Length: 224
Length: 90
Image 1 (tube, helix red, strand yellow):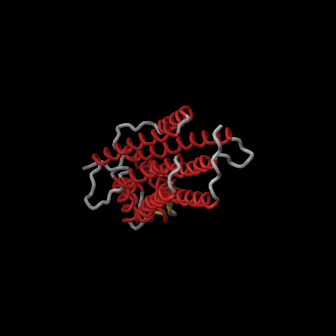
Image 2 (image 1 turned 90 degrees about the horizontal axis):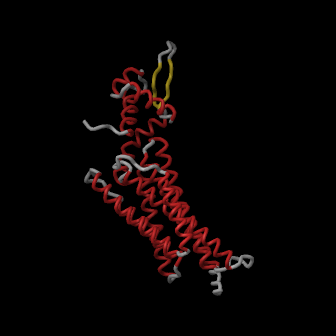
């Protein structure tokens, strides 16, 4: 049995908790605001877009749990190494589910107007459950990260389709780069949860992830 | 003429009510809104349910439609909501 990794210092856990709280709060504000507009307008785009942030918030929470489990090795003395592995497996499965749902809702928000018949929302959850199952069966974080990367590539395709269909007013500032940055940082955050990278890298990625969400939140709150 | 989407129809109905001094009978509202009777009734039920429009009756039993505060807020925000939809490609 490999020796358990030492628990991270208290400051590090506190920082991780603070980071997660900020991200979760921003996602919740975005979800709440967009859902509020959806309730008045019944405009499906707001529904799909709000769900993106709901599941992204949950995914970030699970990412923090996974990261802490990964770095602590043994969580308290009562838990065995196998126990931690089991917990880790569960958190990765739920993480895979919520992360996939977030990206897929974002894809739906970009495509729903341009598809003749949009597939049922159930498809989002079926795909996400399949990805979660694959992540459990493969027992490798790589399978999960690869699935998120593939979904992000689908998101890029959705952005391209949306761009081709939308007749934009020249004055409108498009938010496509924000979508890409949002999920590029999501992928980087995942890598951080599963790889032990230097602390400077970690802080830089954390800072930039918060910045991307802050820009989106600013644009949402300013307009809506 | 391009087909109006849902959001535009809601905006048009609310704008017509506001333009008529925030009180209009169902028949002229139906005429100005350019909808079939069936669609009009469906939209009005929804707008009342969502609290954007209120139905009131005068002493002669005539029904009027008026905007609620929420309805006025929607009209104020409509342009921004449209811009947001364009910005984010929703």
